Length: 503
Image (cartoon, rainbow, N blue to C red; front, side):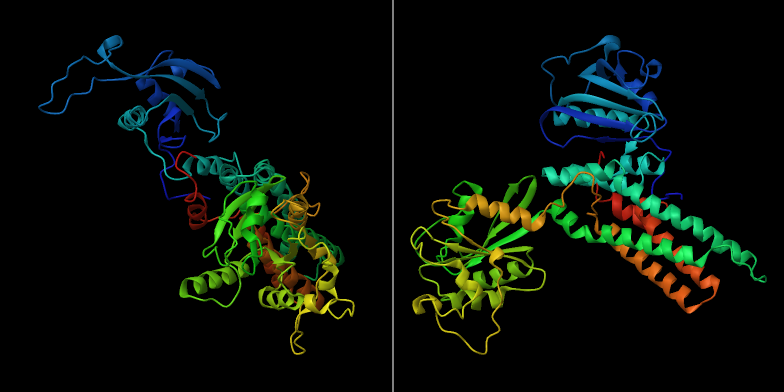
């Protein structure tokens, strides 16, 4: 396809490192004239005569800047050969096409990280024929020039944004083509049969059948099975990429803020014996074995005594509704079993992963957590049980969901971290497993799976070959959207506009 948003014959320039003051700033040029433009401002070796993947020391020079009108210059600027003003001493790295990231000529200037120097060097590049790169345009050119497929290009953005070992490994796997290879294999198998179906259409007036229908059925079942595996991996891939939303909820003085501090191993939240200390949510990142958990400490659940507390309780309920994991914490001294089950009845929803933490066990070691799984047990002391509502639909808890701890003394807190990790990973994180983490890919796989369902339905009901061929083409189209074999300008604009300029 031809991408028409920008003139791809231009040579582009951008700052490839974050803006601001730093030790080093890298300016990147890419395009057919990149080396020529670099030579026009670089004083050292002639870059056009150098081999690819070589670095060369020199200076960037320009005419001496003129002082503003009415201002006297007290000192002469440092001049180099030819009376030119020395802007900076730099390292120029040359990459000759096609052996570069974009498969074009590329030059990178490693300058001192002064904003003035970096801006001046970019201005010189623009004056000598380059234009400013758009967001993601270097990676866009890498895709259009066949260096990367579309899913690999998207993985570049994920790699830059990765903030944990798990999200980094996921992006690296995709950038190296693990996911792409799976899709290309599926698509290749289907293309072979599609060509036979299309051949039958060319002989529409004759009763011929080139594609064995039984073999096609078997192939589609196999492809759907692999697509289903990829679809099922999205839940894990999404949390590895974006972090796991984990809410700490419970009644006032249950110890939520103390538990947050214990998990983080720092005094992040204010801890007090006064009920309702936490009025707003507090969010922090906890990294467990490379997986990021976004811990959210919330206001205590109770009948609010003022407007501000009511807003805090409402926000707690909203956070629980949008979370992946709920850690419900209660005080084993003050909270009745039926109060715990009543709270959970309000908080639980489908697909919410739950941990019930029995807190302050150091003060009441006689509390039996198994009472929560069988509140009809006659051996439960009445003062622990509370009032049973015969009309209430209390949730049924599994003993695996329940842990005991003392947040104040960090008792069993390491075990809670293990439970959190197991709820998400459960042995599924392996470097050789292909995991889907991109919502666009997930949607395309769903549509491809549905198209194959239509193929199977058509084969079983005996629809004409042209309809079968149409459904196969639709499935191929959606698979092709993932790797970029099928793409549009609007799709590419949506994807690459999210990149940083310089990448």
